[in-house]
Length: 258
Image (cartoon, rainbow, N blue to C red; front, top):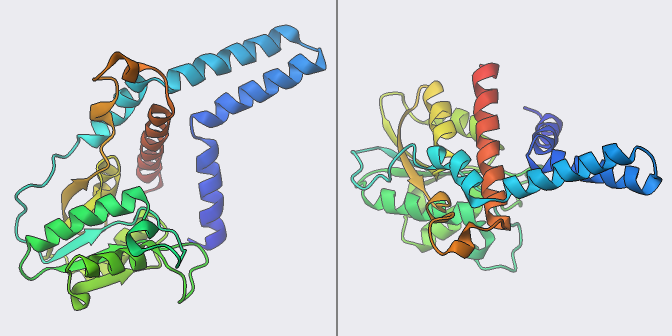
């Protein structure tokens, strides 16, 4: 996948997110209302957009869409023997002024913590940290680079760390790992729980003997199950809904693109 194709795919996928049609409805309805034409259409658009925004912001909606993905695989508390532990990237900040752990976005940091824990349970395993960045150069700090630095600080020997710093998506990460790992060797695959079903399917499609080890952050257990105030609409349920929708959209594309 070329860089331009990757960027266009990201744009198209972003437009398919639940918030995009809501914003389109609200913008079009507001323009029609101020224009003074088609008042009924304007009110219908604004009402529909508001109702959808309310629905998408409810904790119950996010839990309904994301819960089955997040709990598809239980935490790997007693892993089988494995030769490799693979940690998929979740984003990093290319800012040398930040301390190494702060360069990792929340998803990357949670995945790496679980990956190092799994690595410590495997006497002779190697740790693959993955994740690139658009327009990567030798000086770019990718997710793989940032995770490798933190993993070393957490006690992982530098010679045991392999970096896959050119992969821009899950498919490319799976391709890179498949080039390094013999099919007969077992891999502990670490990624966010929401991302695990799609990632595991992708790795197994590439002939990798992967065992799922889902990591945090976990979102759906706390959505709408505590104080009544936590059941009100909010930004976090909307964020979780978009994450879940992204995963389902990616899984759909994965099935239909072969």
